[in-house]
Structures are given as C-alpha cells and as structure tokens.
Image (cartoon, rainbow, N blue to C red; front, side):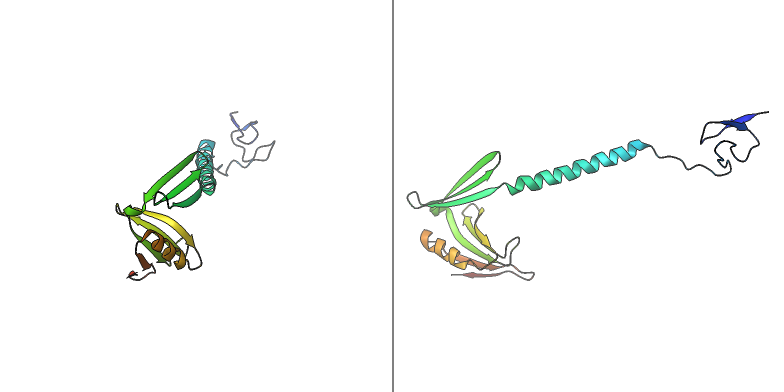
Length: 162
C-alpha cells in the first residue's frame, strides 16, 4: 500500500486517506501558499529607515537658531544661523540693500520682514503671527531704504512702496 506524508504533522498515512489519522488534517483542503518572510523583512526595514530619517531631519531642524544683529559702526546686518554642527554668518552691508519687504499673509508665519539685496537675495529679518510693520519701518529708517509692502494671499500680489 502506498503512503503519503501529512503536510501538517509529517506523519505517513495511506494514499487513499481523506483525513490524517493523527492530526485530522483534511487532504482535500488546499493549503495556502506561504509568502516568503524576506519581502516582509525588506518592507519593514525600508519603512523603519524612512521613519527614522524623517524623525532625524525633524529633530535636526529643531536645533536651529538664528540671531540677527545690526552693526551701526560697519553699517551692516549680520545674520547668524547656528545648527548642532555648524555656524553660518552672513554680513549684508546697508549699501547692498535695495529694500525692506514687509509681507502679509505668508507661511509659515502670517507676517514676515525681509532684507532684499542688490543680488536678489532675501534674508529673513523678522517673522510672527502678529503685525510687525513697525519692525520693517524701523529697520528701513535706520538703513535709509524704502519699505515695500506685499500682501500674499491666494489672489494677485499687491505691492505698495513707502
């Protein structure tokens, strides 16, 4: 008499048996094909790496500070950005500034003040969720440059020079 091996308990049973006599496995039920665990591990590894890199970049961005100082003696504004591994300082001379921009309805803050240079660079001078037009006017008066007011909403931009 020929025999077959039960896929459930590895016992030898007669070829004509419908059920295993040891574990009662039904031989007419097709066993589902198992997926390889390698794909699961691969997706788990890629997902973990992605989440870890996003968390690291978020945390790295949180330890960033910016200091702005006005040097009347050299007639310049110094923008200093500190990160955990670097300090970057940029000096903008008043003669290189074309205008001070006061921008409303921006993101991430509702109000921003920028220093615009002759090279077209825009440096963030101040920002906040409350109106800060006084800071823009104060800076523009100090360095002798005009204030350009810009309203950035979902429509066309409106510029007003003072």
